Amino acid sequence: MTQAADQLAEVQQQIADAKIRAKRSDDVCLIAISKTQTIDVIRPLIAAGQRHFGENRVQEAAEKWPALRGETPDITLHLVGQLQSNKAEEAVALFDAIHSVDRPSLIEALGRAVQKLGRSPQIFLQVNIGKEEQKGGCAATDIADLLTLCQQHGLNVQGLMAIPPADIEPSPFFALLDELAHRHNLPLRSMGMSSDYAAAVTLGATHVRVGTALFGARA
Ligand SMILES: *Cc1c(COP(=O)(O)O)cnc(C)c1O
Image (tube, rainbow, N blue to C red; front, side):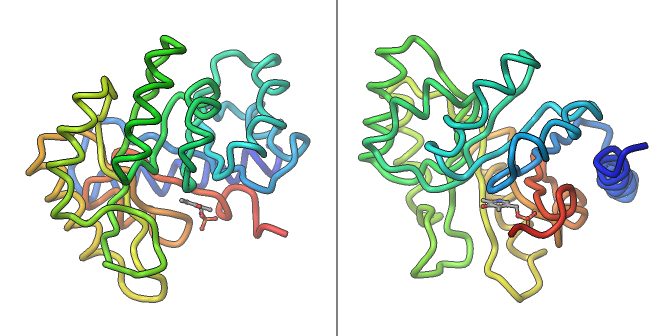
């Protein structure tokens, strides 16, 4: 096996083991976070069978993915980084899922883009689960209003996304995101990164976002 195939198999095994521990039989979507990675580094992972990828910047994704998708059309591309409203149209054109929707102005801009392009990416509302000043995401108490606004603007919201605070035990934050998703009747939970995706899966993650564990440390 190539190194990429090896790493992929290892992460898939960890996810499978976590599902067994949690007695889950539903699917967990592994998103390979390929930000900062070059096309040449991404290609072996595609060759190993990986199809879901995530980027954090619209511009970088626009430079890399049209070529890769030309080679492999069944790629699903996720945006996991903060999105400016003036890039909403480009994001709707490029991505199949957007995990970082967190405010009314962005919802309105995405609604206009969806209308104009006739393309409706899957939307996750990002929740600022640790109430951190510097982080994106809405307050848990704003979820209901933002969901209503998304409906009014024709957005296809299916889940919640969170990035727990660094350097503390993330499990309580995963459990909280799971509970919030239940409470708002949303089926999807995007949570868990390289250091904690197995814990996230045991606590209900439907999407894990894994970069370093698949590609090695970023430059
Ligand atoms: C970079 C990034 C990840 C992946 O982080 P790793 O620790 O490399 O797995 C996941 N989610 C978001 C939002 C990111 O920006």
